[in-house]
Image (cartoon, rainbow, N blue to C red; front, side, top):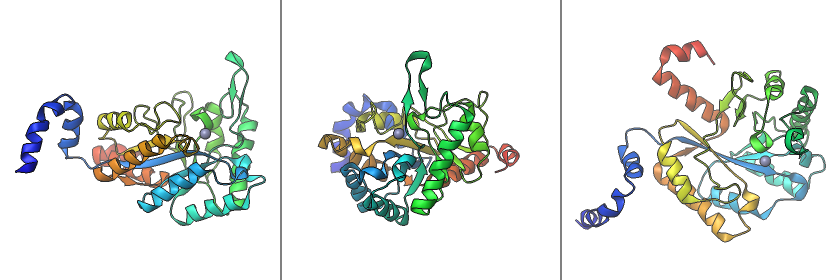
Length: 279
Ligand SMILES: [Zn+2]
């Protein structure tokens, strides 16, 4: 009775956001699988308090996440950072290749990013060195790649095509026409993210984007934990996003698991096309 009265009293306020409630009440489709794409771990700087706080929270909530590791930071890593990464790996989080230098240079038309506008050989070296360091320093073969700034070009697709160890490409931003790739893509849906704008988690903006894309099988949402301890409100917004997703019944998965979710969803929708696409 109390719940009914409350619902009645809130009815007027809720009708103002009908699209959100409609989606949430539809209830027919399960919540999407969620990949928490957390960027920019540098092992040469120790363990930043932002990473520590985020993973204390995630592990207390039994939530799986991913850590984008910058290769250059593994050249002369701090031991505590290596140990911290290995514990995260052992606890089921996925470490992935986030490029080597995370660098960019030039202005205007001469503007170049690590994986956009650089030669095939340079891009090959950047990915290969980071893969090598992952194996040498951490004993881990990164099976997922995501470019710094999410900027890539046709050369990036060619480099990845030659590698069997990297199987998943997060946030490929080059069209299939311009840069075809057989790596399993986990696309970016810009409207659904942790940070609005970058570095600033925002629960209400997230929830609006989520409501509009709740029927996707997988949502990959990006953030930068080092920026979240600058202001306690940022960490709190991130916590709200995670707790909301848990209440939705979302499953937090690794990129390789997310690819399987997408394939299962597409074969359920179109069995013939899925067979043709074959693995
Ligand atoms: Zn980055």
